[in-house]
Length: 125
Ligand SMILES: [Zn+2]
Ligand SMILES: [Zn+2]
Image 1 (cartoon, protein in one colour):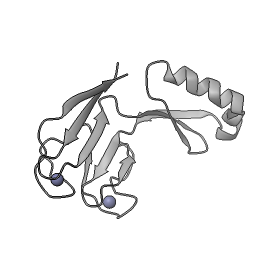
Image 2 (cartoon, rainbow, N blue to C red; image 1 turned 120 degrees about the vertical axis):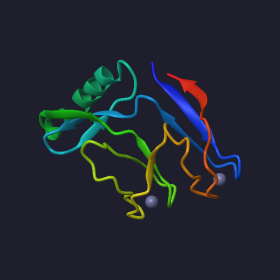
Image 3 (cartoon, protein in one colour; image 1 turned 180 degrees about the horizontal axis):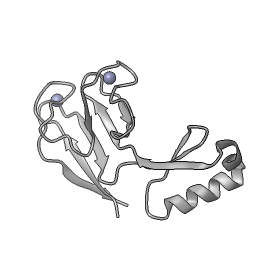
Image 4 (spheres, helix red, strand yellow; image 1 turned 180 degrees about the vertical axis):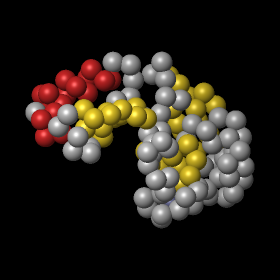
């Protein structure tokens, strides 16, 4: 079961949310990542790829990883990055000031700089 945390800036109302399980993915031999989000999502993904016939164009399953959402504290872009493999850099502004959206407590709000507090439990899936 995945749990969501929502952060809300007390200063300006900026909100961000993240999931504790991040974004698990399968990487294929053509370098493309396909994400699945919840228990059973992996099977759904495989079925979809088979129906689309894209499992052939993707090639073999190469590896698995997890790329949680990261918030750029400079430009507010949210992007999926795997800390184990990816260059931790915002694709939009090239900044490196990134924080996982599930883990924003103690980070400054990208809008007003106020330090973000405890996240509130959001949706469960
Ligand atoms: Zn950025
Ligand atoms: Zn703010």
